[in-house]
Image 1 (spheres, rainbow, N blue to C red):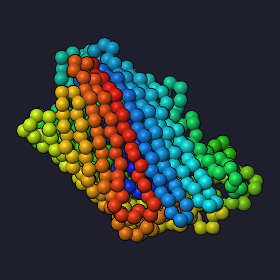
Image 2 (image 1 turned 45 degrees about the horizontal axis):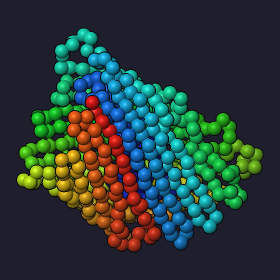
Image 3 (image 1 turned 90 degrees about the vertical axis):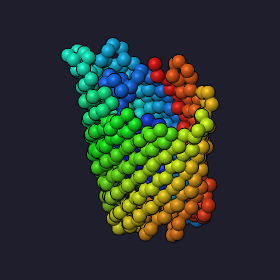
Length: 446
């Protein structure tokens, strides 16, 4: 679950737990209704948004090397979105997402990589029920529907929202998908156990409710909660992996603006479980027992940001603390004849960070470097099936850094943003290396 937040659709295998880190994919928080609802299409018809076009690109990689072997986790995503209000109270949208997470594991006898392409192309439509009836009313009752055009992997979502200006907002969403493209667990071609490629097709279903609004001109807040379920019917009698489980999640956000001061606070939490099942169907595989590994997890993530605008125009300083906790309890059946790490166990991962930076703004260009300190502690022994290798005893210290540059235009309200981040290890983390993380965003409102 490295670099994954509570809203992520499923646990990631072969990873070291680093709760609190930014997740890969600029659109992951709103795609498929994950986390808090933030549908630009619904906002366009309820008065809180604009017509827009947006493009986002994310790239990341990390790796881990130990005497027993190594693992890598690379991910790339490309997201495009367009929203246009054709007539008052009726809007249309188009979304495209290509998300490619690819973790891998390598040792003397095992070489595996996981391919789980997600996304696709989908079309959306939204409307305001109150607009024809109450033309000048401050209340809006909006609805939006997103549906895939050619791939069920893109997912379908339905959302409704009751809105009163910026003072009150109540949203509810339901999203689901049935992946047409299976995830692949590829094995090294020289391995001899089982098949060369195993598949799974995990369907996701998410229910979310959000309540929020403005307390006054300079204070806004929202809370949300929901449930996510994973199901997999199998692969029509063929050998396959199946991922199943369910998780409850909740969160709260708040922002306060007072004169030169800006403060933001966010808290997320989740409890749930994930079960991985290997079903073997061929005659010679029948000698192997049915394998089922279960992982129960709990996660809390707290982040804040305090900004002070200086007297000199265009300059501000920012302080961003963060803290998170992740607990995983994993079980694995004994005697399973598989080339997999099979030790069960429980582990608590604690992480805390503090970053500071300075923003320098010119007429259209803004540059903000940040640097800080990260402390992470993993206690007890994590279940081997969910992590390729244990992190080891002791505390890991690192110095995270980030550089962000944005360019805005006048009149057309365009924006271009580039962010690169990484970390400098300060202590030995048994071969762990966090690579660069890139985020590019291009957008325009009109």
